[in-house]
Image 1: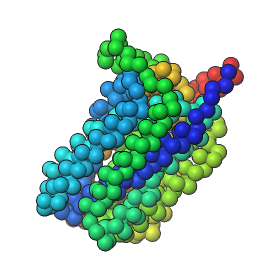
Image 2 (image 1 turned 90 degrees about the horizontal axis):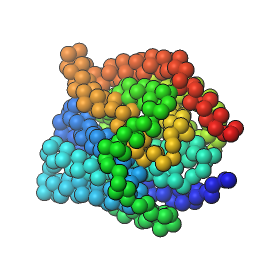
Image 3 (image 1 turned 120 degrees about the vertical axis):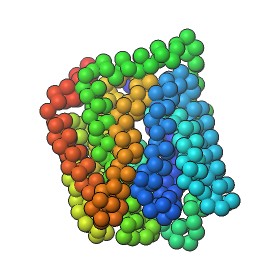
Length: 416
């Protein structure tokens, strides 16, 4: 029997996440520029990024378990609302004078701790709302919302910083939490609440999530390979800003990031309309190969036009890769274990970002110092090497039969 669709509720929930992503992008851009202007160090910028990311990663497992045990929509409201506390702390510090690096680190860490409740609950709620046929199309819409922090936020933040300062960006971001919470509350009102599973222990839930992702060897291979890939892609994310700020101002940086992110918008719209219909494993490998080559071109020289062209190509490939990864994994995991599974997947597949955020900035500082070319070119060298390695790993992925079999398994299920 065909399951009833709740696509309109998904669109409302997606709207809230879109606004939240834009607000988060404003804060991320503003704090990045603020820290680089105060320290001149790519390592310091990377440290802030790491502390904003690490809690979400480490808490993804318990957050995923909570998403299966408690009301997912309520967890999203609580997480989104309380995450504003960290930003309020940074804003107060700035109003009392210049915020020190350690104060910014504390604020983003606190905000990230509460935000960690969002991701597994959001992904699991998407599964709750939609039919199997809508998964691929919805994944494209989710990519659009994710791209907003790269597409809309940078150029808006650059323009706002030209007439004001980072405090305005923080205020706007804090305000977006109210809209997001309202959208989630409306969706929650139309869905049945979950009953807490008091008889299931944390360890039992963890084991069930682990069992869900190891049931098929191809899913586990995708997660391991994804962790390797996120390390190389993380270098691009954390080093692009110091690379451009080395020879340009924040307005140019904002415009460049928006132009680059247009690639993600274009491909996300394509996926939102048509989606990927077949050959998911091949599309995944091809898109990541192109992403790696784009990273090499991105760091070739200090020319904003060259950077924008290769950056556009890099972002264009990401939604295709994310769509294929999401589909191959989502359709090979039992629905009742989605929250626990996605919590573990977030922990394992994104561990590469911890490595990238934790060391790539300091490596770029060191390379720039040793070669006496400055932190900008040091960052560019690290990005190019990371891109070459990403392309090599993506080529190797083609030869994993277990990954290709995930797509065949899905075809078998559909025929049945």
